[in-house]
Amino acid sequence: MTAPAVEDLLRELTPQVLGTLVRRHGQFEGCEDAVQEAVLAATVQWPAEGVPGNPRGWLVTVASRRLIDQMRSDHARRERESATAAEVAPEDVPDTDDTLLLLFLCCHPALTAASQTALTLRAVGGLTTAEIARAFLVPEATMAARISRAKQRIKAAGSSFSLPEGAEREERLRVVLHVLYLIFNEGYTASSGGELHRVDLAHEAIRLARMVHAQLPDDGEVTGLLALMVLTDARREARTTAAGDLVPLAEQDRTTWDRALIDEGIELVKASLATPALGPYQVQAAIAATHADAATAEETNWPQVHALYLILERIAPNPMVTLNRAIALAETEGPAAGLALLSTLDGDERMAGHHRLLSVRAHLLEQTGDTAGAYEHYRRAAKATASIAEQRYLESRAGRVRP
Figure 1 (cartoon, rainbow, N blue to C red):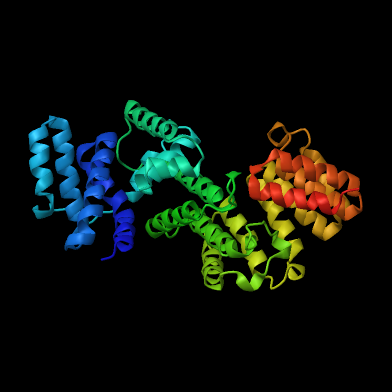
Figure 2 (cartoon, rainbow, N blue to C red):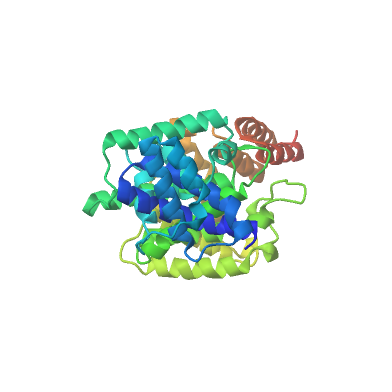
């Protein structure tokens, strides 16, 4: 098996092996370190010597022995067993996949959203601390400290490795979905840096969402989140030019959208909307499906998009939802109506100086013919974002309407 194929296999097996060890030994931090050592050994040995017949069992065996060595602090034993790790017969490993339990543990309510995201990428996603640090543009030492503190907080909270019951389970699942949503959003539209996309993060979020969906296929919100990710990612290639400049939705070449992903996403949307309850990810997925249905920007069913945003605003009120509804309202009733709705956000502290509010207002002002106002807001929006791709786009729009 080639090294890239081994890497893909290890990324799939890592959370399963970690879940097995945590269930057996109950030490999240020690188990995570032991699994990483086992994965490192496999990365070196498997491409050269071949993948063992039971790769998951091999990893559990090696990681378990590394963990025991750590607990005993027996250096000589560690060296002796490391040399013979590849010859060890796999332990009897249960068939259960504890990935979902591991996600619940990483998204413990005692952690901040930033720590939940970092720990999920490390323990479940299999990314190295250096990779996570690069993705969020912080020093590796800072990210290592954040992950270490997260593990310590979980230990201090005395969390058991089991699925919570009833309402607590539902609430924790929503946290899991929110963390995956944050990871995907950062991958699809990076909040800072020179690239618009961080494809590895977006694809990792989709992979993890597929894992959750495989275990909870009847949950409408799980299905809706996966549909939203798939439909959104289908447009990725059309979002930038060859030079890396941002292309807005209305100007994208829709023939370059990934039709297979769109077809999959639309089927997922249908399945999610067939469930009894209705949640925000299902509605957002339905909006994405409406855009995907339109062969051209002019054919977009804007009244339907606006109606869906009204529903979303009612079940999950959020200033960003209102902002997006203003865009849809402008398409159905004109830019003045959109600007009137935007004005309701001016007193919201969360939106003060936000580049999205500034850029949407600039766009609508441009449509009304107020080029001076549009120029001012495009310039302010460009200064308010840390994304270089978005800065370039907004500055180019400002240049087009310069008085």
